[in-house]
Amino acid sequence: MFIKRNNIFFSYYLKSYKHEFNDTITNINLKRSQILATVLFLVNALLLVLDLLIYKPMRSVIPAYSYLYYLHLIVMPFLIVFLGLGIFIKKQNNPVCKKVFIYSLIFITMLWCGFMGINSMYITGGISAYIICMFSFATCFLISPLKTFFIYLVSLVFFIYGLILNVDTLQVLYSTMVNGLITVILAQIISSLNYASFCKDFLNKKRILESKQMLETVNAKLQEYEKTRTDFFVNISHELRTPLNVIYSAEQMIDNSMKSSNLDRNQINKYFKMIKQNTYRLLRLINNLIDITKIDAASFKIKLINYDIVKTVEDISISVAEFIEHNGITLTFDTEIEEKIIACDPDSIERIILNLLANAVKYGKESGSIFVDIFLEENYVCISIKDTGIGIPEDMCDLIFDRFTQVDTSLKRTNEGSGIGLALVRSLVEMHGGNISVKSKFGEGSEFIIRLPDLRIPENNEKISASILDEKNINRINIEFSDIYL
Image (cartoon, rainbow, N blue to C red; front, side, top):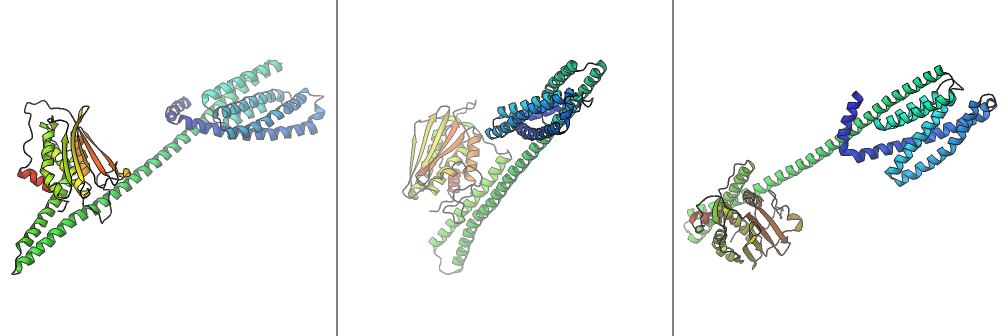
């Protein structure tokens, strides 16, 4: 019962490693078959020598010695063929050929040992050859209990049939049959335990290997997280320190100007403008950090209402057109649809578009262009923001939406940025049930495409977006574009 439970247990967990387990078992048995064939060849050669030197005179007296001699002669060429076949099959590496070779050797050897066992009764009165054969197979080969049962049963039937034909005394016949049956039962138990032990070792090794691989994977991820954390703190410290230094320097210059008798109002206004812009930069960074933390904690909520997405995007584009053109870049807005009301959060949409437009300006080329387009695609409203800027390397296109990732990671970056903006944009888009993708060719420009579901929420207060040019939204524009210096 214990062995049966173990076999069921191992069979269940070995299913996932079936092919690997079978290949391992086959290779082990093939190797042991070659060793067995070699040992049998040497033993048989030794027995032939003994037959010729010692037992030859006894052949005329006891026929069993003659049978023994002929058995040795018959088996010798078979063993030579098996040794050659074993080498050939091992090189071919064919699982089916390997199994045919293994089971052929087992059956032929068992038949031979059965003959030897029956014949030895007339010499020694025992069946030692058969007993040695059964226990040798039970301890050497790794075969499933069902297969060993069939093999041993065939061997026992053949052995008993041989006994019936050759043993005259019923008492000797029955006692020998009982000895053979006990031998087979013990061999079956030993074989099952041996097989179960191997299965257990195999599974343990696989689990240890998997645990090792899992630990290596976790360790690699931890190292990656540690690197991300380190890069984040280096990046954030740079992003915080730069505007603070500018603010402090501007404050010092204002203070020095106030102490001097000669005040230059234009110069003072310049310093105030520097303070204001870098204050916006700090506010933008802190807002992004707070929001990305809220999103991680699932406490950031968007407020969906039915809103005209076309007018919203158009108003945002118009509101920043003058600023963008002041940087030497042309902004073009186009749309295939004049009005499209969908369920969205206008504030989040504004933040998404402003962030992407700010990036297009930041990484744009002088005398370049930005194209904003809205079109329908199946069940989505698509917003495309395309630029003719520096573009993104192909290997970075899948990474730029990851948190704290930047294309230019050197300390002397051409453009400022914390690496949070696009991660926040993707999160806001996904909270709308949409997705964002990028197409880019390094050195030629990029295109970001936002896909928002063409859905409405069940409410009656459909709204058309109001003018974007109020004080609150102008402050948002100043914050989102604060990394860009005029």
